[in-house]
Image (tube, rainbow, N blue to C red):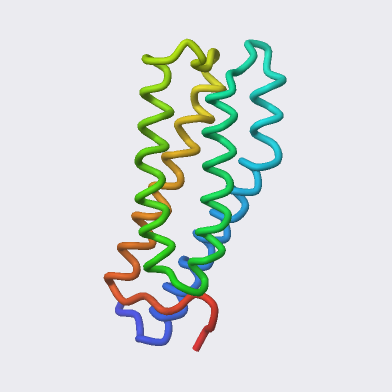
Length: 138
C-alpha cells in the first residue's frame, strides 16, 4: 500500500513538529527540573554537572523553538553545540575532580548533550530530505 503525497506530507509535518516540540519540553526540563534534581540527589552533584545540564537546556530550548522557523540553522547549532557538550560530559568524568557521582547524575549530563546532538541530526536529515516547514502546514 503506497501513501499519497498529501498523506506523506502530513506525516512528515506531524513528526517534525512532534520531535521538536519534545525538544522544547526537554530543554525546559533541563532548565527547571534536572538541575534541582542533580543538586538535591543523594550523592550530590558538581558545578560542572549543573553547568552542562543548564547549558544543554538553554541551547536545546532555543534551537528547538528556532527549528520551527529555520530548521537548517537550528540543526547546525544543535549538532555543533551538542557534540562538544557531550564530550565535556563524558570527558569531565575522567579529567575533573568536579565530576558527578551517581548513575542518575551521570546519565543527566550525558543525555543533555546526547539529546541535543540527536535533535540536530534529526533536523539535518529531515532538511536534506526536503521535509515541510514546521510552522505552517499546507
